[in-house]
Image (cartoon, rainbow, N blue to C red; front, side, top):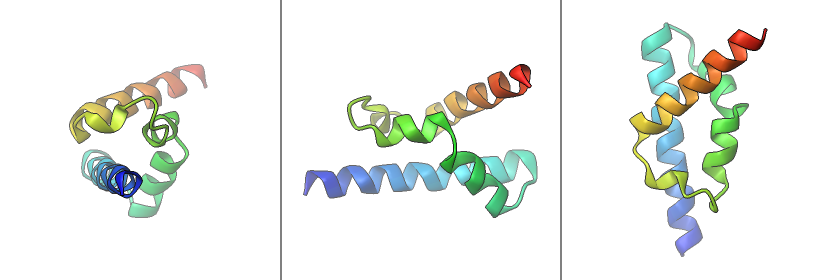
Length: 75
């Protein structure tokens, strides 16, 4: 039961992250999904030991944007 609720929280946050990327960067849903699902942020969100799912979607989006900026700086 608890695991189902946690998975639901992660799913809702993930949907929000995808929508934020689409709106902020004029990208397709497929592009946004690819970014989110292949990010370390998503990995951490799915690691229930981090408790990242307790944070708001907008907070996690800032975390994701920072990750993306750091990745661009490395390339």
